[in-house]
Length: 522
Image 1 (tube, rainbow, N blue to C red):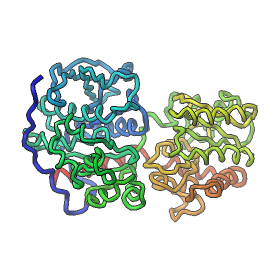
Image 2: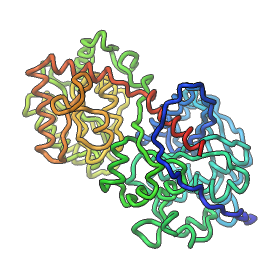
Image 3: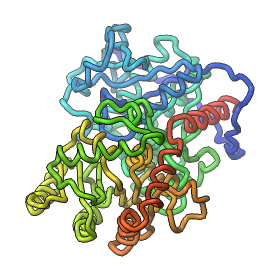
Image 4: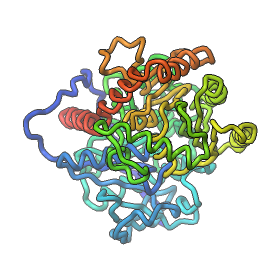
């Protein structure tokens, strides 16, 4: 196939010289924006983690506010096709530069719960997205580098010139690099790029071969420390770093996590890059979709409830006990829902199971791990506790059951080592299930301790602990259980405070629109 010539390579746009705060809320009518989200995941059709929920929820909020929103995803073979309406090919002849030639792609369009989605299907021996799962392959960096090039090639070839391109995580971090190195010279001068980093642990660190594949020749240019050269490996490039350098604005998923990644050593080597680009870096707390996570309308729970009929929550508690064959008594239920990943504080979860039972409460766990050793460990715990009428460990994931646990539990445990935002505590708050969390990341931005917060009493909604150790965990968990038994009126006020808080996409949606307006005006 013919070699694709590389166009002239302009410098990336200058970094803003003044801080992005405000986002000042626009009270006057504002023009509608054309926003394209480029993402490796979106709920419910391609979901591994919270990133998928963010794209799903934010897209709807932006559209509700009068903006035109489109989403570009890979066409995985394991998409939930039953959730895609009217899927059909709309662009049959997309040729994407790759190595010394190009790969032919077909682009499909379909609606996912009213969201306008494009799916890119490459026809290649590399078989990038027909592998039965989304991640976990040795060539993941190349797969998503190709997807990033294909997504922006599609925008250019189809004549789309969005106001904002919103990228997510390392998998799409090359999009702003391609835009400013290639496509601006071809006439795509209008779009501005916002990139959201959901977890700094995964960065897409790779070698020079990727530059050959993507047409980013001139390794001396891209290995330069000021562009994509990895901060700790001289002969490596870092895709996430490239996204930070070339994007017009970079967000992460809570203000506290933004601080921790830049100033407290949680940037996994990118701290100095974040300091260099601090004028275009900030945190926006995720929202949750109240159409999905809302006890007033939740179709997965037997009895709907809200602040006006809070006692009906206990009908769901009885249903949860019946489903899991737990004793029906006056004890509180402590729950853990999440991936069985060391990040989530698994050693503290193990301890919490026994501490909860010793304190006269019940414990429910729902989760699984891709690490078979971790799964086996929790299966061993399950067998050990199998005869207990007050404990049930469900090793796996069940969407229906997760809704019932949120509705039926009294206390939700989130003891993470680090937590960029966390959706578990946000959902628990909506269901009046009191969270017990570690004071990190988005947990610290959304949960305020009943006894030790400087917030007004009506804003206190849970329990927190600072140190990642057993005494820290017990300091919060035991206070929560004791409050349930000894001060039921106080516990009920915590439940009401939790349900009164607004963690929908309403506030984050406005925050993102303010960021978009800021970078469009630069």
